[in-house]
Length: 68
Image 1: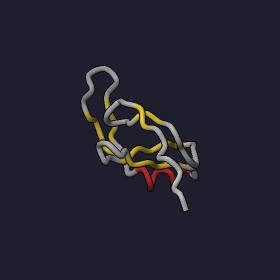
Image 2 (image 1 turned 180 degrees about the vertical axis):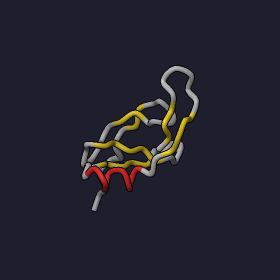
Image 3 (image 1 turned 60 degrees about the horizontal axis):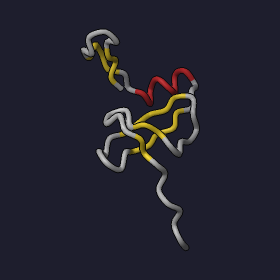
């Protein structure tokens, strides 16, 4: 996960999200954007259905249920 300056947008550091969540004992849901293929992390959540891709800035809907 990148640490980005709110004012200028410069990347000021990187954090390994899995290590951070383990240290803090936080739940963290993850989802891969079907459009750009990049991972999205949602600390404090155990699962996500609808979300805005953190990389594309556009909404992502859940996949339709599979038919068995």
